[in-house]
Length: 508
Image (cartoon, rainbow, N blue to C red):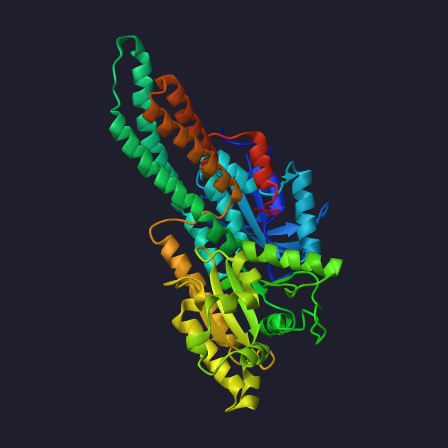
């Protein structure tokens, strides 16, 4: 299957009017005749030109009787690509003209009249896939590269575009194909009861493949977060300063700030680039006991945001906290404060956090106001509380290193830069740890296929252990191979391709 059909397609690869130059792509068997009908070259033609060359020419207005300066539509550069050495694997030309919407629309109209048709979204990349220039994971990575808005998302997309994910899958399928061939060979000699594949070796091979698939599937949480923005839930009691912190980070008044408790009734999401990493900050409703039905819904959504977050910022009002503690605790807070005391303050939040997979940052807000209490019991409580958190690893679990403490003033901005550095440092360390020598899965279609293949291989492993007939084990193995093949496009269906490429931009 070399092309979708025999059509020659055209589309702008740039947005007219947004720069000095626009680029129009033409691909298909009539690319050169159409280009020659549009452009008057000083010498030769597009069809006669050497591949990978650029020719200067002039496009004249439609129905111009004479080629004079008054009938010039535009002077253009035409790039010539001859099959199979082009992006699509077909004969292709790219016309560079001035970025006038009028000029672009006229050139497209001339090309359509000459026999081209307007390209569908992603059709150039789809033709590249169908002609074998790239596999499906690389084709999907093209859209990710175009959409990447940060250094981290661009790095992940480029690695997939270069075939990093494809190489991982090819290695896995090669191992599984070797196993499948041995099992199929046994089926051919089933009457002779011959065992070509040693079961202990197959079991060990399955363990290796399952571990790799599990690692790839597990990387989806981080990969998807980097692609779409790492979700950061800002949670805490009412009037702790959550909305003020969001506004401070964004540098604009995005969320309504009020002294009235319960002002935020719903989650507010905004993305923000921090040192090359995209974060998706979620301001949540303050958590407290309430009888208001609307506020209850908002609080419920706060807990949902906690569960979905990669990073959870637990924001505490330092002044209120110390006022509360100083009324009931002695100066030796470090020695008297227990986990149960902490739980009384914010146990509902702690119970919703998974400290094994989520980064937790305790942020003590309004730290600037503690200067007003210099030397009194409140400041002692505050300092002791910070010390206790550091020494006891937040009183959650011994040896937990996934939590940190920051002291800020969301109102003045003091300490917020340090908080953002903590966020970017965590994200980059996760990215480095997860991507050294491997890839991150960023596409939910790939993740679903990996999970399905993993289940099929677990059936194979169980079948080998229980002595299940070889033909049934082989069937589960074929199912896993087929599922992995859908990721790269070795096994696919037209409707799958249409669903993938319909989300591409025109001209790509």
